Amino acid sequence: MTNQSAFHNKYSLVKGAARRARQLQSGASPLIAAKSTKACRVAQDEIEQGHVKFVLTEKLVEPTLDHVV
Image (cartoon, rainbow, N blue to C red; front, top):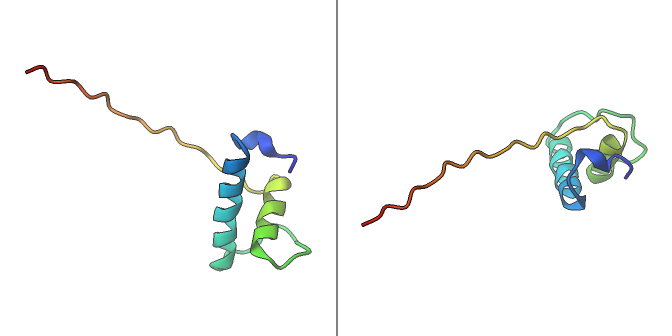
């Protein structure tokens, strides 16, 4: 995969491809004319060609205060 800059590491790339593959299996239309009919391969090709992007949101964690007794 050449488009790994959009992902933090290989793990996030695999998670992104798996999520897109589930969308394809649930009936979403492919964004490319793929040679393969396997959802996982189509998802990987879509990511590689830059058609699918994932946004990582920051989780805001409220600080907790230690209560002194």
